[in-house]
Image (cartoon, rainbow, N blue to C red):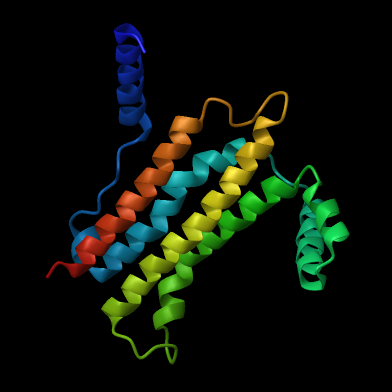
Amino acid sequence: MSINRLLIFISLIFVFNSSYGQVKKPEGKFCNTFDGRIEFVQNLIPSNYDWLLFKVENIPPDTEKYISTEYKSSLETRNESRFNKIVSNEYFYPWKLRDSYKSLISESKNGFFRIHGIGSSTKSKHESEIIFYTNLFEINYEFLDSLDEYRNFDNRRNKPYLSGDSYRIELSKLNFNRTIQSLIKCSFQK
């Protein structure tokens, strides 16, 4: 790569990083208090990924219901023909991405309380918080797998919906992981 191209590439990354890539680090009450950390997590997912869902096509409600039911049934019955038919539906990958996003949002809002709620755990609040972060990492990876599948699907179209957004997607992934790591560090501070 020539020096000019390298300088242009570095400057584009700098501009892009300053526009989209700033990691929101938890500070003050968002780092020092349990309630602050939970609030920070609940706002983290939308701030990182909502922009992406505005670019992905919406699914008609009847189609969404059909895909959801058929996908589950095809897996339960291990019916390969049924599975292949549902996966070939033009809305399958958008549905899967949106469905995994809903799971990530649900975990961010309810995950800790499900782990540490009344009668559900004998673990300390701190242990439950760390398990919550671990679960968020796992569900985020499932979301990212769905995103990769969607991107592969999208790239096969004549006019991809996500063309030109690769850097922004990669920075969103990185920001999510770095922020959760920061929250884990905050939870260990006394």
